[in-house]
Length: 241
Image 1 (cartoon, rainbow, N blue to C red):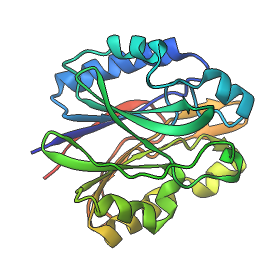
Image 2: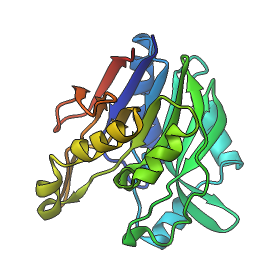
Image 3: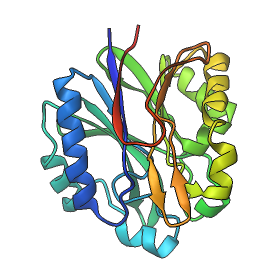
């Protein structure tokens, strides 16, 4: 029975060292609890940066010595990690989820559906599948889950689990009406595809912005079967049938 986990974290911006230090504490807890897979939020490592010059300044090439140094700090006994970050390749930047196992990069997914404020990111064109603890999974990043084709692309790989890295740090006027809408939308994707879903999101406040998550597990019927409280960091661990 695969044990999957998702971290609901504070928001870190422009501080990779702080984000990585916090991640290491979460990884240690997930390892202790026997997790096979651990999911972090969208853009977790550098922050969800939607100012293009700022995003470019902090973007990481996944073949760079800087990223290799990050990998060396990750314990090889950790669960398979899905880590949101801002990626650079060939002069373009991408909103990416890196998949890391035993301290090595095994693949990545780039966000396909981009909001207007993300137009400077390059859109992803591939939907790779990965495995952890005997479960085959694919990835959507936040806004992707509003589109049936993004979840269907995961299902078409033969996956049984959809991993959703999200960052819903919004202006409060937008956050309030969206507070209870994320899971129902994701539930539609589960019912359409027969996939399980696990999401990881940030929580907390920044100025006039607020994030509540949700960090949750949904079954193929679109029902929420596990969820963290909306207003505090934590680790969600779930045994997937």
